Image 1 (cartoon, rainbow, N blue to C red):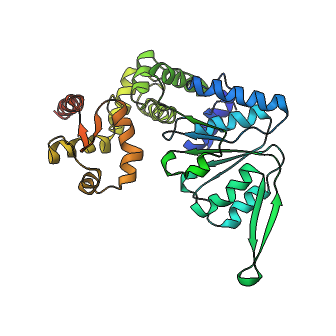
Image 2: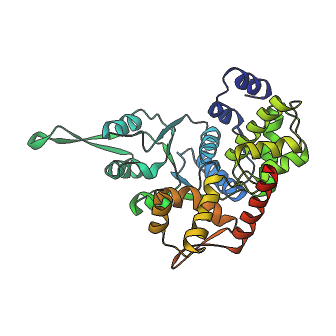
Image 3: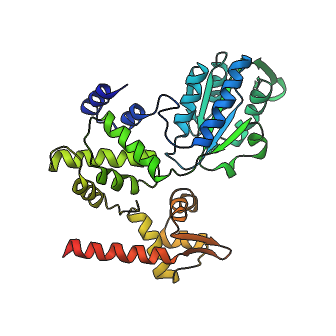
Length: 340
């Protein structure tokens, strides 16, 4: 889909998820950033094509919104293969996994998102499926139970996770290559916002573009979400074009500051400062203080706060940095001015 289709989709459905799919890069050239990952992936894919073999199984890990699903789509496209998508949580029974695997055709690519949430018992079925293309199923119960072995066609499993540490060592070792997706650089995010604005047929000032990119948490998905909200604001309160004022007002409306911190991010820093004198504080104690799950803190909040230098992990626990004090002070002063 290109510009006209994007416009039609946004006008008729208003579905952000559908728009995300529309904005998804369709070629390696359109995919901005993650240059080392792209380069290595293309070598693996082209070598497999040259040998006429199925591509090795691949594992992508990194924070949500960095492009793992997009890379899986690009790999399947370059292989000329059908892409079948599922996720760890959606595979609830052994029969679900067996159905997915037995419906694979020769050369197909199976993408399992959030594979760390796959039932550990099901991993035992994946081992031979990945290694020898055999599916071992137990039919029946009790003394009459028997093992049924099915041959699987050559296929490629691509898995994505935000928690690689939760995958068992035997499962990780069966992937032919593992790639970590990092946060994007500011110029790359600006290029992504510029491309998305063009596909939306939006006029956006360079200053507005930089404001949105800076607040995107160096994550394409977030950048596109902020661009859509700026488009909404400009449509309702302006001319429809996104200028610097529209971009700033959009962030104010969403309570997002110039570093991309949302209210819950600032609350994390403020709680450590106010209740624990800036830290260090242990994860369990801190999680109880803000009534949040430890896994959510580690997976969702901490990575970005640490990447921009506002939070650190020490042997004694989490600690707020001097930069966090400075940032929160500026933010609070700015809020007082807005309210005065």
